[in-house]
Image (cartoon, rainbow, N blue to C red):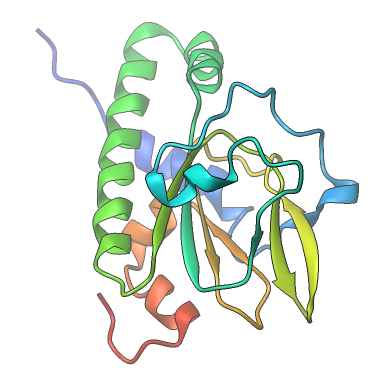
Length: 175
């Protein structure tokens, strides 16, 4: 069996991610519509937000890992031939695990969500919705520190520079 060639995957991911680095998320009124309601909260930290009439407003320090849904992954698989998709999925799992490990070392609550939907954060004293549907990565990490705009990163960003989260949260030590 021929070994998978991964030399092109990382540069391709980095090139695709480069446009998204250090961009502020779009306000929800200019963003694409939210994903279908098949997105579900996976962690008990967020279970109290399910079924509410009002959206949860984040007003405390948090890192939110937005995982790709099965339809998003299937769509990516349809765009890539078999072996290319297998290599991409392998890389995605590596970066997902690396980013999770980095975030779990931070003294910050970590929430996991499936899919993309607008999230509400308290910025400048008022609740504002931010949409992340236009970000090019299948998985996405959103960091929020009260008093700051939320910051969207890809797992590749965190793997490339593990101190991004610590710097954003103003922590003295890098992970």
